[in-house]
Length: 461
Figure 1: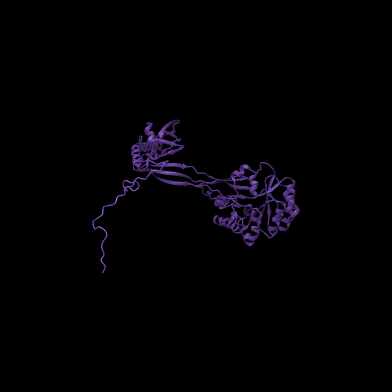
Figure 2: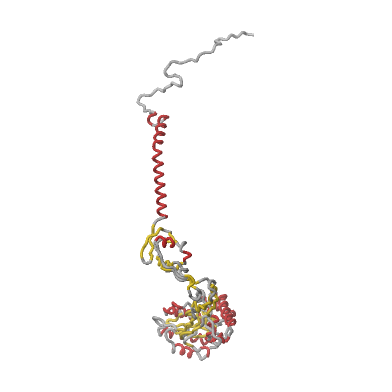
């Protein structure tokens, strides 16, 4: 085998250090700077020295920032406290006073040191049970009396008007035996249009029995009764000349031809539909509604309503209105009773179902079949401003009406009359239009049907 001889020393060698300027140890090495180049120093904000400088400055500024934030917070809290507790002005017995917002009326009384005499506590017979045992103060806030139990919870926000004075007398706790006083019916005026002017509101009488004194006292009428008033009137147009053409017993086999004449002449009429005839000819009933004519009810069938009992009457009216609504889609409350008969008893028993009962003040007499010329003369020769003209839309009068109607319209217009529906005629009378809406019934809260005497309840005219 060949012999190998090491050619290097086995002693550890010391690190060789080069002596040239560009090869210094890393801990001491410095890069040579080029001539003309710009260099940043630690003092300019970079490096450890610059960071330390910023840190010292931030630490110096921190107390001022905390103080500023604290001041802003205090200012905000102070503003909120001021807003919550700010003063507002109210009127007290005619003079302006300042109170803290949301103060109660009770607090206002205490702050203003108001001292009035309390009312007495009375027995049911008005004798005094306890002096100053009644209401402490009489407080009227914005025109409304405030119960003393609510003074602590009634807040003031500014602008209120208060009247505070001595308390009122109060009655002892007592049991009440009440008797309702039923309204009666009054019919006032004359004319072709009748409607409820004043609805009946029951009155009340009471007998009290005191729980403290044990006394009993008849307090009499504690609430006055409001009697029902039905007003009858006619239309008085303020300006112009107006007349309303109305047809009873519709529809018929002649209805579409009557509507065609009205359309050609550019006028609207009012049709009173009879329930059983609507059921037999729904298409004609819809034609009347589609033509823009006004619709009322002639009741469910051709009967004298004044001879019916209360239940029968209400059934006739309700069935008539419902049949019309089913056929035409229109809700109706306007009534023309068959033969124009609607008694006081009818009003008392069914006034809540009708907006108005409309008869007529000019009868064409067409149902007597006197001939077209006579019908025309009866209308044109007797017409006056505001008239409601009665005509008939049935199979018996149809041919006569088709001949008479164009002449009636032409001659009325030639005399300066404008032919309108019933609602339009009512609108020409400002006072009546304000009191009456033919389309619906307006019943105030608490209203009841009036009570008739035994003689009136027999349903006779």
